[in-house]
Length: 141
Image (cartoon, rainbow, N blue to C red; front, side):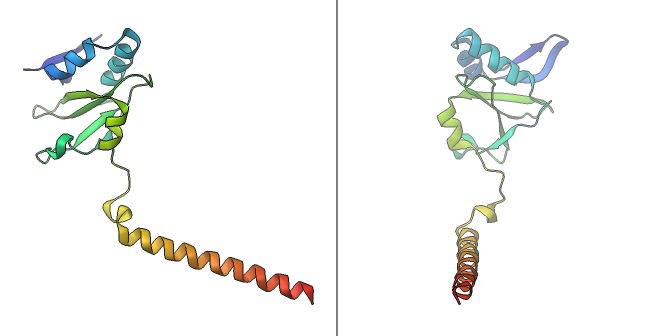
């Protein structure tokens, strides 16, 4: 069972799971208001891609909306079958960081890519230091 999130202009296309509703009710007023603003922006502002909670996404893309209050939990959601959105959980900031996906494609996060970048950087530093050494010794003569 889920609940539709109301807005000033009527029901929205965002629903919440009972667990997310319970978590929202337990927040202090400033944090609850911040979370409510974040939920209201779902579908209006792009969310941050995240790993599926517990690695069980069933092929679905999960997203996060980060509230403006640093003390407020992060809103985790996904698209629902009815072309709306489903808020699945509110998670603390530390937990969110474990789910957060960087914007880099998989290859850019790979060990092979990082090793190649390190080798190129080392070569560039060697060339720079070598050219400086050449200038220093030629200026002494």
